[in-house]
Length: 563
Image (cartoon, rainbow, N blue to C red; front, side):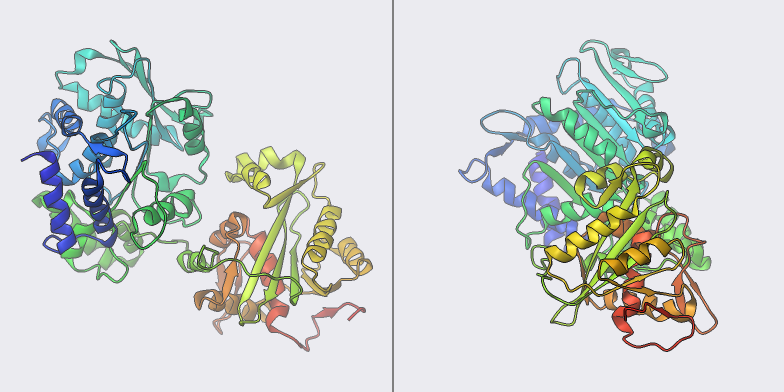
């Protein structure tokens, strides 16, 4: 049976339900069969080359398993692995002769040969793929992570007949004949491959990367190559504000979804996960996220043992869901928001941000300390009953580089994108906040009204707000005042009555936020337990304080004389 026939049968079995598969793997199978049908037609410029697909299968057979019951034996790819790798190497452009897929995103549960596949591909790219003096990179946030795939490649060569063709050292694997090299790099050591011209780069466990900086460096460096490959293989993670979820997972899910009008013919995607309503206790469902592990006895036994522990110790269940079942979670103790539900409130092609010109608006400020992130947010009441929310933040220019390093978030990128304004000097210049507020009120023809704030650090700004025609409202930072607004805003988001601009700074802050609860089940954001910045969401909650409360009689509430 040819590889094409094998993959066709595999895909048909999943599509028809003969073999269990998740919705997104079925979409990937439909995409493959559609491409096979459309090849050599005017509307599809690619063709399947069986010989090229066979080469990667033969290549892996020359490498050796590095551990386990198959240690030292040839690596024989199963059909799921072929679906991944033969797709990447089997499709070529009819006119140029270059390979079709320049990027690959594969998401699957742990222990399903992720590192092995990347290591084998890395060795192939610097040797048998046939590009002289090519550069290959194993990328990680820390060098320990970067070395996982690099070390696997080394071990796979250890008992292989190919070993003599490579020169191996602690920090590089060189293909002698082509003068090509594979090296591990990481942000931890200040090395990210910037300035290089990579033929190949792999990112293992991309869900651990807080920014897309290394991804972007590789993509930029690959522009001069006619057929490079950026390969991402990851499991799901516990932070829905990281780029693996907010960018790649969502984008790739849309690429393969036949009901969404979004195509990228040069990006290979395969996602194996449990579907939304699947019962996690059903072992049959485990196969959806474990196309390799659930095919042999040792793997099945290991899954059962992990599930029993997770069931007996609830604290371990989140790990089982992410690592064993490939389910994305926002796992933070006392986390404020279910980030998947927050994501559902974001703008999209079908749900654009509304025109807020001339509508009623309430502003909110969280000034924090003058050397930290300072934020202003706006809550706009829409005619349909929803709340449109907007936010902007400020950082002192002289401390920006330091903040990027200490907070490990892409403040610089967010400045470039316009979500953050950097103010001159070593402290945040509140004059820039006033100027921003005046400009945005003028832009949207908003009537200057209430701006809610925490009285701490705000005396000068309050006076200036009054001079500019705003009505400053001091919001007591206690459970009695903030409990209901904090709980109500989350309830609105969960019910789809909030729409936001996909502001990455606000989303990051919401993901950071944790809450504290009093005996009456009231909640408020807990700044002492939030180890990362929450200023944007704190400013938004301040605004929402007046967004739901039109009249409050409480001795701690200070009303400006202008009210």
